[in-house]
Image 1 (tube, rainbow, N blue to C red):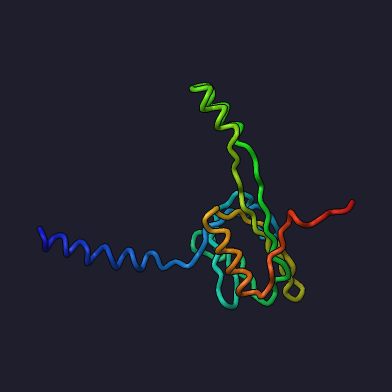
Image 2 (spheres, rainbow, N blue to C red; image 1 turned 180 degrees about the horizontal axis):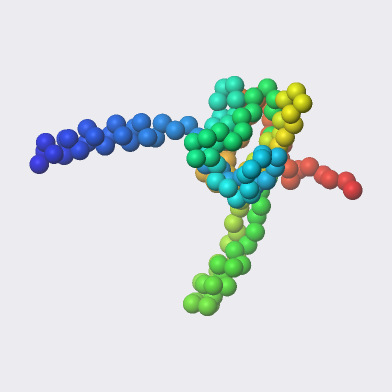
Length: 156
């Protein structure tokens, strides 16, 4: 029994260690100038010392040189969970009412770049546990400070 257990650990531990060595973030493309990608598509974001890559199904979609990044922006979308509260209220009115008081946040990061004659930008939605790491990584490699889009004032 011990030998079987030891053999299983010898197989599983290296697999887990090498499989977890993926230095990427899972993001959702929300729109922008990246061709052939629709909003809502799941992508992987790789932040490297000299480039930022978005890939889908292990194929690079766009590669942006770090020196070409012109702006990093950050914003949130906060909304109440009305739909879930209505559904829950059908089962239990008290819990449904409490659910209506809760809020949900979505974290968005925007990136714009200009590389010679090529300009572009996109917005991506990040997981609530990853957005701080994505922002810190982008700020670290580009040397640019992220702009809070809610702090900007738009004049018509």
